[in-house]
Image 1 (cartoon, rainbow, N blue to C red):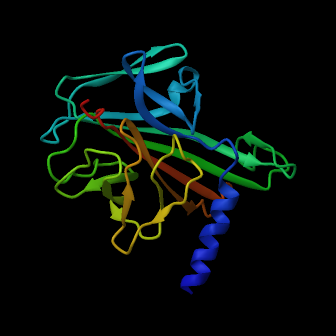
Image 2 (image 1 turned 90 degrees about the vertical axis):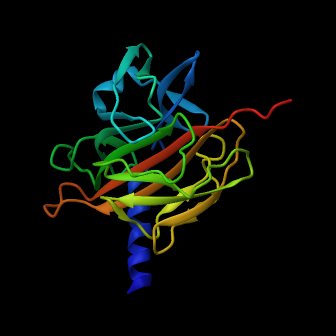
Length: 243
């Protein structure tokens, strides 16, 4: 039964992931913090997609919400947060996409895209650490899918290890795939979470790090949506080592 469930999950993932599947994360652009939408070295413009951002939150060191807002400036969407913010969290609903027999993907569900064979809903999540957490970090309340660092000591150098917990609807998710570096090695070998939703990865960069996790769930019972793909990132930047 376990093997069957794993094969079914792999089949769903194969169906779910068109070649242009991207994630969201936060990174510096022209000296300002921006919301990035892309994969690997590709950085797609976010400005026209800004209405797909369904949630944006910021928290201080005590986990209290603080003010944060988007500052759209074509083609980017920058972020302005209270000086006390150390954690940012956002969600993007990329909508429904249907696959045609030719392999082409079109926006919409099966009932609106004639001839479609598969329909998925694609949700993106991003957590960014503006400062290293002091001790363990609490999950972001209400965020459906997320990567949360655990442990008392946060990495300071590339090559250090980081243990994370992957949560879905607030519960630890075993068997989820975690990639250490979405930006510089998007096709790298993933690590699977254990029974407690934990995975340990090696921090790759003395600079921006974007860790990625994916989970594919079944869609609606009415068959209009075959699957729901959850794509989460955890991003942070390590300062360059002193000369």
